Image 1 (tube, helix red, strand yellow):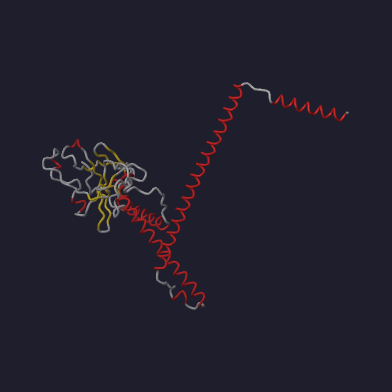
Image 2: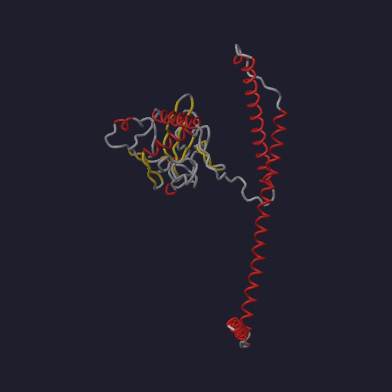
Length: 331
């Protein structure tokens, strides 16, 4: 009796659950639910496909890059091997192998041969790069011709030593240049003034760059100073037919001009050179300063005439009192 009652109760509960779950829902709610489910499913499918496509593209690009690098490395290795095999056998000098055992001599010979092969590879690489650079620069549409490299090239110890030696030598020669002005003297020409310090600086740079002029194109300094005579119709009668630098001061030695600037290091090939020039001569083991010249349109004559600057010695300087007695500095 009790068993039959429990079975009937269980069957009734099951029927009630089925009737509740099978209850009808509104049509609008059912459609909205299906639309949301379809949108989510479509987004997952499309998004997953795009992700797969992008992943495939990135993996493919990486694989291609790796393959190219491997191919380039292999080509480079084969080219280097070909160069190394073309080098004839090199042996170490006899004075290094004298008195050594056969194994030690073999090591020295092998080291010498390895150095020779490495040098051959380096030389070939530099020649190949230079050839490619020239070919690229000569091609149509090249916009980087004659442009300096972006890499910072630091000077080697030997270059630094050579530069320091050149600077010391130029400074020593400037200090002993004949007729060199005092650093507190002053010169003025064409409405522009400059100090003896900057004049001395220009004289030193003229000595420093005498064999390797600096600048661009035809305007490289120091350059020869023509010292042309003034025209016979010059407005100043005292200047007609004369020269800015008198022949008695240079005695036929070649004259050179160099710009005077007020910068910390003077003129070294960049920037504006300024209106004034120092005139020097470097011959027969003598460095001579002949004066400062510049253009002065107010004095008449041709537009390219040079005039000696007016010299004002430093007050209280013994060296400036008699040092210029044999030279003409302005009028």
